[in-house]
Length: 97
Image (cartoon, rainbow, N blue to C red):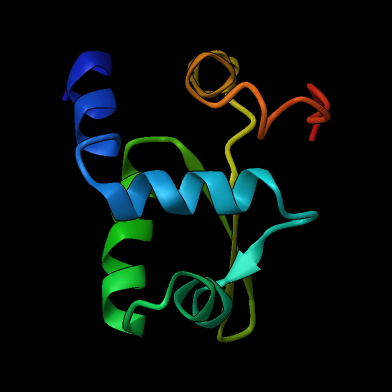
């Protein structure tokens, strides 16, 4: 997939957009269970959408044993797109976070 296809895939779903907004407002990331509870979706729905966002390069996954923590990617292209689409959620986001 090229960059355009990845962007379309990432933003083609309301749950994915909600996940990006949620993670933009979280400090240090969140695990799947917390994301699912926060968005009132099933664990499998959250997991499936997180994986799509990770494959699109929008999220970074950190494994701590069996726990997977998700946070926004540090990729500059991803940050630029998210800043355009969600400027209020990303106002305080540092470039190096």
